[in-house]
Image (cartoon, rainbow, N blue to C red; front, side, top):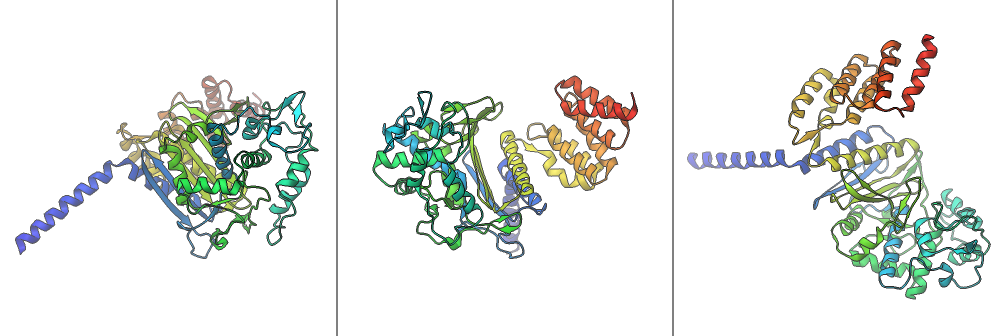
Length: 493
């Protein structure tokens, strides 16, 4: 018996060691821990109630929920929680338009008046008509991007007027208003984001398929297996919709009086994951067609079929994205097929501070996925660097010897240093700024940040030296130029 017990202990120990070794070597498990750390640190800033978060990389998926829907209520969101996804709704209309193009139901260069009933002689500029492509890329060219009555209705929605009242405006009213609008820019030349284009896309799809747009949309959702995604106003339990908050106050739902091409979809995190996997794993030609670049301007607006943020990164390759902002909810979806990763991030709060925190969390996570399978050392030691700086630096140096599995970058160290400086821990801040300079001696921001440290501590001689050094590496660094002028004004030199 004793012998069997010893064997059992040895067997369990072997399994435990194997499991620990596998976890130690599995970078995806480590990156999920970073996601948890980043999310919890974001909530600690107390600007966001709760988060729904998912990452996808190379076929592996991680999702989690954080915080409380209503502060103090201990009601964490879950897989059944429904979120307004606002303008992410648009990419579903874009996908359906891509399907119609592939099926030759429409042509991107179609004059939209081909599909409108009535006289719309005004919908052109100097002989150039508005096309379906213009609707999909927010380049219609209207003098006022939203017709007057539609804007009034939208403003009333934002103020909660239609919370318990039916709309007195629909797609037919928009079509009538279109007869009175002015096109004062050549269609296809000026980007002006609005809901008019996507709603007209939905209307045109109704005409060419001879089916109501909500039916076309539901058919598509059913094909994807998105069983918990609905248009507001359709038949589902609205009590499942998450409470959302704008500047700390309960926000009204962002209802859409039109067809649902621009906004109005409600979805769960699992359903959005299904859509993300469709984009990254499916060989359906709709995916490839819908992310074709249809428009680009000098302001870096790159648009596909209502997808935005298209681009090609130096490390990650091709990517595209869409965000959605309702009265009290912010959501985002980023997809990078070349590097096979995706991110979904939703919060049920809306304020300037919340949006800033949300963006930082989103892009910090993206950076980890770009560097994957390498892991961010600073993230592992952030707490130690902030509270036991000397020990944190020692541990960081030791880990960074493993260049195969770990990395850091200028921004990571910079953020820690500024946090210490803002917390009046000037000696520790200087240690991190110097470490940043040591690790990135040819990065202009290493000198710029050190210059700001010395300016803050009123050592203007050293501040001037570092700002001038920063300009050597980046002559376009306007921040350094501004501070050099300030220093010269203070010192009279």
